[in-house]
Length: 314
Image (cartoon, rainbow, N blue to C red):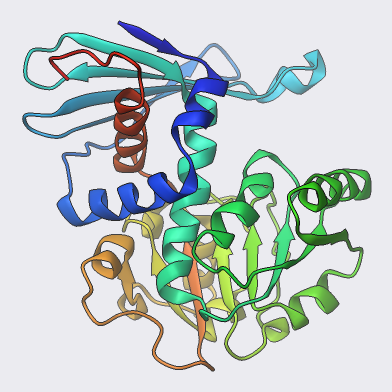
């Protein structure tokens, strides 16, 4: 059984390999049971996220969520990914699940943007300055080569400035901003990856032709965008699970700004080319992701394939 730490996972998942692999995975499909949550003590949660492909690999991501870790100086979320043969059950590999999750999440946003954003997009606003936000510009630039200007907003200004400096080192025209409205009004693409529980982005700010990417809001109580964002947009989700779990979607429905029937499609239907892509330069598109174990499995298979001596029974 092979072991891949965070650095090895990163090396094995460059955007030019990961984004096409996700697209192919959504086209092919796989078996993805519902995720299994388990309460651990008074504050902890364990999530099990399985997926498998007949005759291929079986993967299980184990995620631990301990919100009180911040007081201990520790991240609140950790993950490990275990990969097995779906034919024999033989263990193949264990890998850093946190790095794998962050990269596949940014890659899924880039995949959606390749089909929904204006191909001439140049200006990006990042809402949030965490691990996923740091990866999004590079992933988007892999599919939107003209993307150059990045404005970073975060509720902690020092974090926005630190991320802007990182992005400058990657060749982006990146600066931190305290004016979220002004930045969004000028943006071709807006990507939100936060733990917000109240809307940060207002639909009235979105210019014609904008693409809004919502990554946070993975529980009903969380929210990054107001109902007007949904009312003004053609709305897509990674999987229909978003209709039951994403606070952005659920709260927009409760307010009458959106309906499940108005959903334009999923990432699978987009990848299958069912005539759902951006139709005009002026329309506003919105992509809401909640994550799926299909993405984890596709990424993990890439990591295994990059090994010097992958197991012959993989």
